[in-house]
Length: 187
Ligand SMILES: Cc1cc2nc3c(=O)[nH]c(=O)nc-3n(C[C@H](O)[C@H](O)[C@H](O)COP(=O)(O)O)c2cc1C
Image (cartoon, rainbow, N blue to C red; front, side):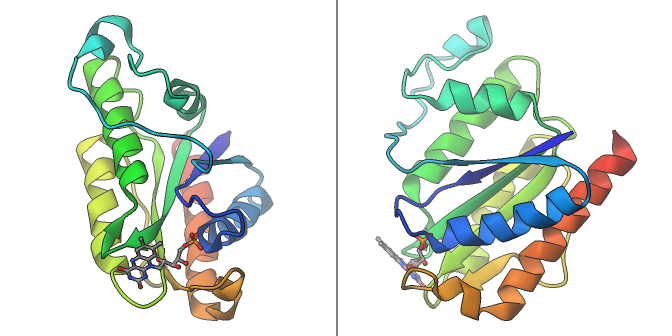
């Protein structure tokens, strides 16, 4: 069984990536496989509402997202991490989630019962709104989101700074553990 983690930061030295790595470590300790994919270097477009996916089961836009969709299909878990940009998730992250959700809903609802949830990283503010924004994707797609000991929010700006947010790291580590334990119970 596997959990796919998607990192929405465009930065090479990304705090969001570090948070996802720490979360993934705990998932592996529970005996599940993990893979982290980054949107860095990709140029994710917004959904065009062409509804081609209802006929083909794939997104018509050729920007690499179909590869990520295939990996999600092959996983029992799906976690998304985004940096906060002006109080919301990075635009590319929401574009990706909207297209992934559209393909799922218009075809075989492959997101159903996937376990996971969002993680948000910011220098100072906007993490809770960002978590809520990304949660909309999970909750409309019949997915299962476990909790943790706090919301999955972390504070960081400079590269590596997220390691100083001990409570934030512990929160996403515990979240990873919960995702893995829930997957083991229901699959
Ligand atoms: C365009 C832009 C907008 C940002 N907006 C916010 C914001 O609203 N609130 C905040 O606390 N930090 C904001 N930040 C800082 C990032 O959220 C923060 O640096 C975070 O660590 C980025 O994650 P990363 O290291 O994974 O890229 C912004 C950064 C950029 C580039």
